[in-house]
Image (cartoon, rainbow, N blue to C red; front, side, top):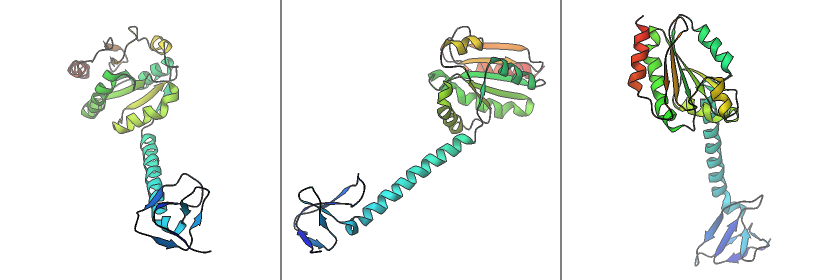
Length: 220
């Protein structure tokens, strides 16, 4: 093939689009023995000159895919199970002999997101004294991956569940959250009896009041 001379223009990779173009500055006239005209006037296909850019694209793609994979793996490290109201009652029963903190929350609830790390910290502080922390997300079941990523990001070694009810008032009614607001916390004693409820009314709950309630029942 006869080399095609040019003084300026773009290089486009042969193959499936989209591909970036390589600008050739005026005055840097070169001949590329594998350049052939495309249907676009003034454009030349040059696989050799684009190799460096293709490698860069492939490396970038690999990094992006690796990031997605790592993110999925992180989310998978935090078990997240579906639960309904009878199932939650059973979980509390299984923890008979321990003090149980149940925290209802959601990723779309600002005060919940702000308060959530406190539950993780509370478990770390009191687990050796017999505290079990159970979190129940009232996100839509379809948002399981987003909830999992949030839990992984917060290092939630708590016992984590996702409401099996669709997003809406049915979930609040089923779990007995009468004010229809999150966050909503409950503390159960070692016999499984409700000790204290923190109904936020959609406002932030003072973590210190939760600490006091947990410590009070742990001393019994």
